[in-house]
Image 1: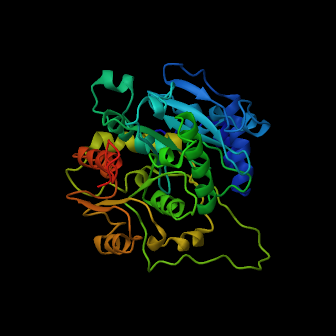
Image 2 (image 1 turned 60 degrees about the vertical axis):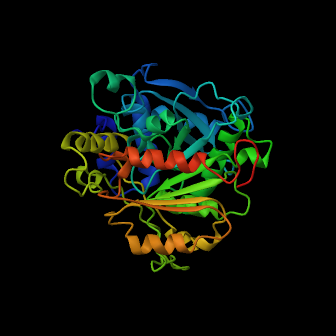
Image 3 (image 1 turned 120 degrees about the vertical axis):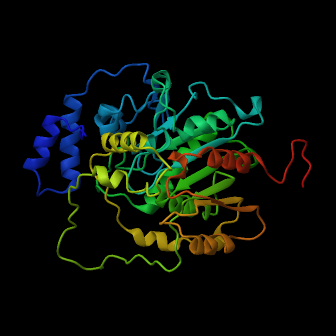
Length: 394
């Protein structure tokens, strides 16, 4: 196994072991930037640096370029078949990496009323690229290895999938704090959803925006739930997949008054951590599990540090008033069925609600044998609704 560290970055990290995460990440970014290898255009079919408000890239976006991230410098093979975009956050113009598939020329909703874009959110530790595009792309298809890309599978079902990286993951730089915060993720998701709606001509009508779907997996499902609880949300359906919501878990707040500065320790991710979600024999062969671990470590060699987790205490299913799909494996150790029942039964009334339990599956259903069940379930939920093709309300 290779951890994909560039020598200059690794040496810098050893010399700076006592410094904060944000200081080290800035130095590593400069070191990586100085050693960026030429990227093959076949791997990334488009690289957009457009924000919603302007075609020009901000100075901040120019400094925090995609190629200076671990995924941008080491992940050409992982990005095979994906379109890579940069969307600036509406709050502070921080550049966010977004991934599409066959999306360079966006189909306008007015030209195809069946168009259903869906945005995928990753979990606590790994970028969306290894999570949602494992073994995807033309090069891998030519090798004969079966694709485990959820993005490709959803595209085959007629959806238009996108995925994004939160700050500090994969192709998105950490911000000046060096931390990942739940409500910052919520705001960044809103920025990306608005960008998706605009590029597909869905930003002029609330009815069109209702065709957008948001999916969150694991801890990303908590972010998606917080987005769904917002009073003005730019999407119409939410999928809480393998959600780690638990009403009995309360995250503590940080003390108000302290003398010591936060110690955001530099930590490397590990191979064992990358494969810890695969717990059931016979659900995934050793080779794709190994390839996932290698892809995950290439995109996120450094562990992102979450803080202010108490913001997840605001997750309240009763405040979710839109069509919702709750789905998890029946042997998911992070989403036990009795807690999933609490989540589903307390969702807001007056909207379609679906709870699906997939047999013989643990946490990462989308990467396992029989993953087609999840894909078809998602597509069915996204495409179905109370309003039929001819405007009749059912």
